[in-house]
Image (tube, rainbow, N blue to C red):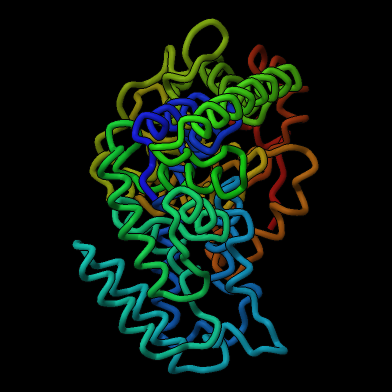
Length: 426
């Protein structure tokens, strides 16, 4: 089906400006980028456990469940991503838990793709595992591959397939690697054609297809159908109006991102009041806060030892760091976890603690809403985070911070007050 080029451009422009569409609510979401390294690290852990023969035969509690759960919480587009990996005992699928050979093949796929540079290498690895015919292991794995190579492998789910079929007139079916690879080729062509309006990151195009597949937007009509074009334009205008109304309602209620920024602002101001130099996550520093920007009055650069650390890219994305007056050592680190999985935050904490800065390992705080304590504790108890118990990561609730931050700013000394208002869960 030949898509009307002008209509397609109009659709992308409207989609990019829609506060409720996946472009603004997911693709531009700061946590999306921050999660890439932690998910890649998690995939490496899965591979190492499979190679060592310690992965086991259970999905629940495994390192694979940890990263897939983190991916599934990446807002709309990955909701339900964990379903494909859940063990279905009646069907005995996916057959990578009870069959050691299939498990090793799965690990080899992840290992091979992690080390690939070109798309042809990844496609070759996919064909290798496809030939094995592992029951229940299909293109849903592409959601893992996307986080390894976001410019080469698009995400995959039912809505994306429906959106692609609606846009192109194709008939891609679920469940087969060959179908996924054919769709990937078409997505790459679309992304090349409309690249200036989208991104080299295929998540943008996948997000657009996701919204088309969920019928948030009608697919553009054929180029030669003027009447359909007019009806489509009217429908698109209605979607835009609805999106603006939803955004206004969300702002009045207080959305998640603003709350996250507010908590970062509290920690920034408290750290400065206590005499620390403060670092704000590199991708959050320009966010609007309190009439200015979040990074106002904060460090422009991390200490040389951290910059030279292999984990520097992860540490610079920690939400808030307090450094001593000499700006040489991290005294406290804070990860704010409002609604998302705490997996990425814990991994960044581990990176900091293992970077050689032993002082920081005594001041690691997960900051979250009061009602998330049970969830945080459950995550910390996962086998994948066995090292966390040694690091004495503390849990600080929004309520305790709100109630005590002003008093601590006036009368507090060092991070002792932070210990008093937080708790060690392990």
